[in-house]
Image (cartoon, rainbow, N blue to C red; front, side, top):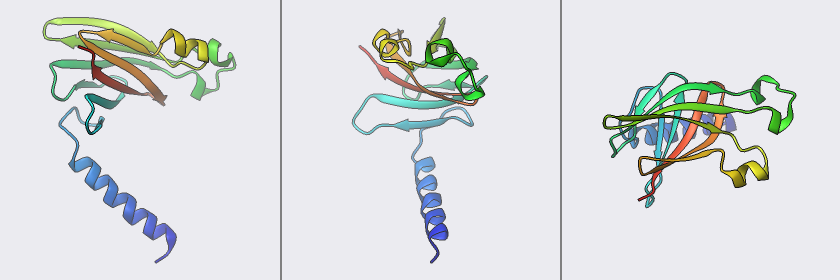
Length: 139
């Protein structure tokens, strides 16, 4: 069996298994629940709304700004890649902005993290108009 066919077949099997194990959420989003942890990763497109599995938390991605992938010449500090989120729990709603931490100082400042409604939301990465988030309960 050629290596390409072998790789494609096994990748397809992995994707089918991964998708069949995913909890329900908005179409187009990717959810991974880490075994033994109360953490969920979401990959959401700009304009997408997702209800976090097992919670009453809803996250809407209002805007994704990814200067770095479009060739920003301002360096890591001058290219403020970020995602703007509307986070809702019940009837209460707040808007937050999370930035990609490009430098050690930015990571120490935790510009990629927000604690809201008893949950910690981290911006892990940006890809095109998609934000990859990690959500975990803090209480």
